[in-house]
Length: 195
Image 1 (cartoon, helix red, strand yellow):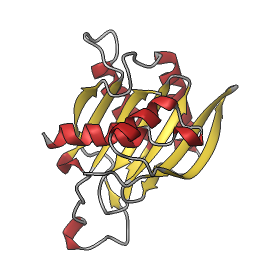
Image 2: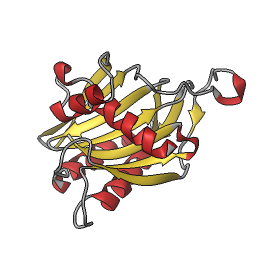
Image 3: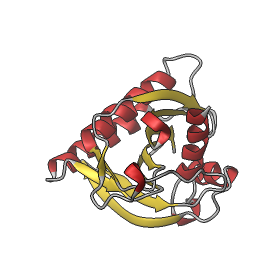
């Protein structure tokens, strides 16, 4: 049940910022879950050939989102490293009825290779924030539900999001527009979604 709740929260957080040029589907999911205060924390772009992938970070306080206890009773000063951790896959229909176009998701995977090759093999997500990579009909997402800063590896994001998508997108039947992989304890999740 906790994993399902986190999927709904993820979906809500994933769509919270349409007014700020975030895909409308992401905005619908956030509003449906009671997230009306999403704020963009940063935006950047990476070119894959002539295709522009948008990286966006956002924060949101979700109604009903259970506050998570910081690791070991205190807020960590160094980010908690969650690279390589296992997760549980689930599918969701919150973002509509159609899955993303696989070629659009492949462009995001290529962008992750570029991020990974630019010196930093990981990124840090602040507490209760989300990182998104969007191109065309596809978004890859990492959500930090915890009160700790979490460090996640780019190659894990590529693998986890692709795996979650493969479990939920065609040719898998019945298909869903979102695939999620929720980390142990429900403190983080990564996934792929129709944007």
